[in-house]
Image (cartoon, rainbow, N blue to C red; front, side):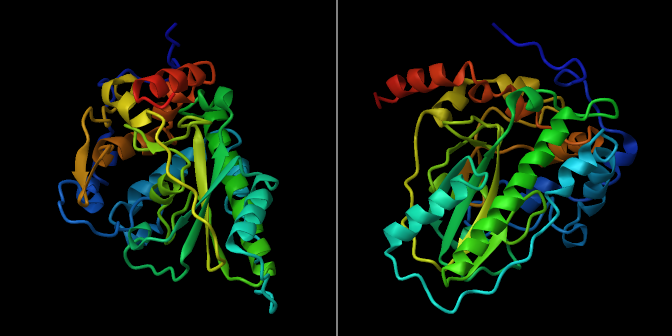
Length: 330
């Protein structure tokens, strides 16, 4: 049975940005992101980096201003921007093995609000241009949305349920990433937290995929086998010896190739049906020049991840079984 879209959402192709919004798009975001580039490179700072670091800063400020009109949004995001103090690195190091330290870090994260956790070796392409991370390891933390709240996106001046759930998950990401970084520091190793939504040095989705937390979806977001696309991410980098968790393939990429749910649900038509070459990698990609103006005017979005069949709790188990059979993993 097909679920009815939120009545506050315009149908695909019916939404057009306001002239004043269009005026803020001075440079193509797709060019910044490297669409069409055949050579691999590090990503450029873009949306949710400090506004003065990229040419879409004014549009980012508009998005923030509009989101604050949603009831409860400021309170929800307050926790995301409340950064605890980092403790000094302990003088004595825990001499346990990498396997033991990895398991201890996982237990700590999962008992301090993370819903899933993965570990990957650091790669230079996980770090934005202009930034430096010296740590050899990255830990990615997944925070699952409340599906019933998430499906209320986008939010507006009368209904802030959807955007508040986004804020709540980012707030959890802030708390657990700082808590885990401080735990690692207490073991005698250096560690830095990287929570959302404001971006810093660390790109989160690529290491999340490498760490086995999911696959990239057509909507440009991570699809988790446990939570679908209804998940937010936070990271911790460290020099503590770890054991990498393995990437997973459960059929999301194959499913996206023929599924058009998010493509049809996107009001500005930003989700393309085919993969594109982006910084030397053929991948699913969302047209930023169409997506972000809607995001800014609608006080956030999230329609694509809310409508994704993998996000629906009643659908995901069946999809996992069907795709396991299709890709020969049963």
